[in-house]
Image 1 (cartoon, rainbow, N blue to C red):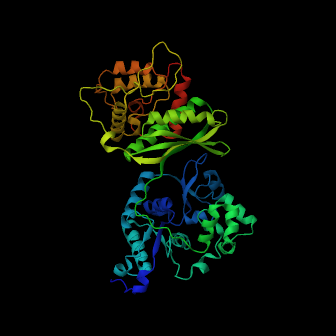
Image 2 (tube, helix red, strand yellow; image 1 turned 30 degrees about the vertical axis):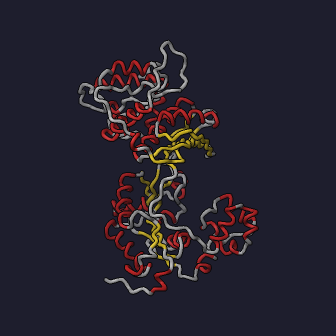
Image 3 (tube, rainbow, N blue to C red; image 1 turned 180 degrees about the horizontal axis):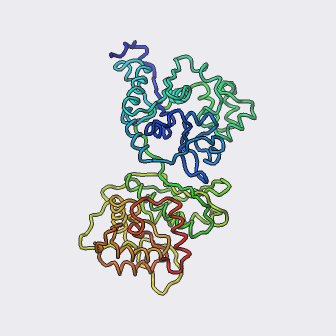
Length: 486
């Protein structure tokens, strides 16, 4: 079928599409299990502490929505079908979908209409392709800018297509609640409500200088959006502004040792992700959410970019006293790096010297203050050696999974679990082959000299399955209570 002919006037207008997968996680679950079709499907964490990540439209009729506590969702929808997350499957399906429209939720098709037809025709073809190739549905919005297209894509879900015609922007926006606009959150929404503003039409009638006095620069921005003005370009490739990880725990963390153990695990995972993506960061942010859901963040900026887990861990330990962690129960911890820059490819990877055996422990905790011990702490390695160590750890994880080598919560755990790992084989080897690493006795004596060791070979004892946050916390607590660490 040939696309319809387009006039030169239409081709010169700006045409933006926004494509949004409908209840994505829940839709994937229904696709894989057709017996769930038409039923209230809710995907998320555990009932006790988790939150809703996606809800089918049948579940949304009961008031269930994303980011809601799972316990609340179960109360609202007791007959719902509650399913755990399957991130690998969602990532697989997401990749297939984005391959169809070139990895962008927003598409600027201004220069494509002469070749492929009207924007609504292009949107229809993309939606049909996604359905035919994946079985999933996509809702689309077609408009003159990103704001209008985004709002339009949400108007007729699921499997909807909404077009905002040129000249119809005011009519489209005016009756909508002001919360539909980017930048209107809880605080701003409350300020606008006190001003008598409830719809976008109300907002467009407020003078710009009044909004600026009340809301600062954000007021000027919202005034433009309320009139349908959004000149932002669609970015074909968007660099990440930050990278991080966070964990919500099945039980509140109350003691500092458990909190530090979790921060060590987070530091290790964040730094590994940075290295996988070839970036380093300077600004480190610690995120702490207490049991009453109060959230605080604390940040520090290094004098140089880094992707080293040890350096990251030391920095968050320095930020920890600026929070109430250890005094108030902690529900969630998170670490992120921002102010990113590309890693120096020519300097980041150091070729391994086949005749040199690097200690996994010596110096990897440089500058961490440890209790006084008879034996002095090992010297700090050079940046080149630290890079070698990080790359070696990354390769182990790539081959044997995250638990092939994992953070140790204490010296005792590293020494005791490490010795078992030697007996049964390194790197999660369950067949008892002799360790391919040399000098392991010396290595573990080095570990004994350290108050905290960054890595332990725990894969042999637990298999290569991925540890959950609950399993890791339980293991760390058990180790810390034991006088021998066993």
